[in-house]
Image (tube, rainbow, N blue to C red; front, side, top):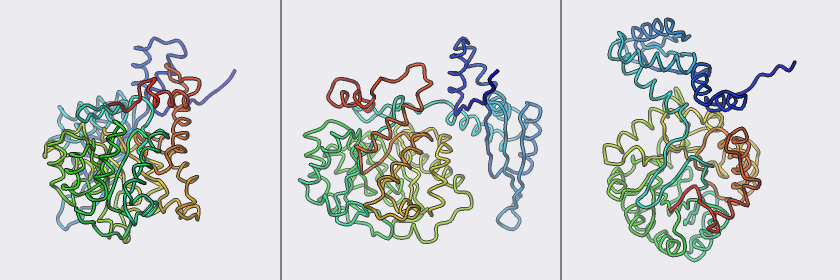
Length: 431
């Protein structure tokens, strides 16, 4: 007799296991919902609401523990954090009961948030992101975003591609190496850097965007926090906007994205590039980051950009210590509750140098390790300098993740990927 302790990352993994053992797919899916263990953490509830939810949880077969926390201001009502544990089915039933039950308005709000979080965190991949005639699909492997800094002072490749001709050559090289997206920026956002005038950014990147667009019809992203730069780039052929400030530095950028109908990447950053690494601290790292993303997404939605066109980036190295960065990588899956594709940018960053004692030029191996962890934990887009090396890591980790899947993988995924780039197959991010 063999005794095993199978490991399942998602309900889909458990369902696939049951199907492989001979169960009907519909029955396996229902069983997975009743058997798969899940956790929900609710922060800043009133004590009364927490107590009512705990009572309701116990009646529904859900275990829970409340952690009291005093209000920050004198006279403020005390709040509690609540950790709930149970089967996916029971947690969903508790969320539905809280919405319609006797837990009050705060309980109903918590129930609705819980239902949304469970659906997003355990409900599979986010849907496609579209930009006019293009479609970015996340049902297959993660995508690669090649970094091109047309700047004199970026921390990694500053000055190397400041001339338009060299920048175009590098861009097309990354396409040949397997980049699905090119991310072009004309302003360094390294720690301590100052904001770069709009005119300077435009002068640096527009000739590159125009020339690359003549040679390639794939995804071009403009890395900028400026509405004027974003507008000029989109007019020149860019398909999406990557804003390190999520619209905080220049709120008018939201109107540009809404009017152009292009997707956006919203990054989490505490402070500005000049101030972000001055003693960054958090009361609750993930709680504050999730709340920030929800608040910024709502602002972009109010400006006319639908949630379906928004991606998020946890902002590794932007207002975080080495410990913060490592925790974000380890628990990257926590951002699934937002329900949007996650862009991960770790390439050659200083936390890798701190851990390995390596210079920027020596951080490739450390970067590849972070990419492997990122793919394993659910990253949808990897933003990298070294496209060819990153692609091999991505394909290998994706093959491991999908090895139990019913669809299987081609014998040589890299050969198939090359065929896709040569026009013999459908690439994941298609025009």
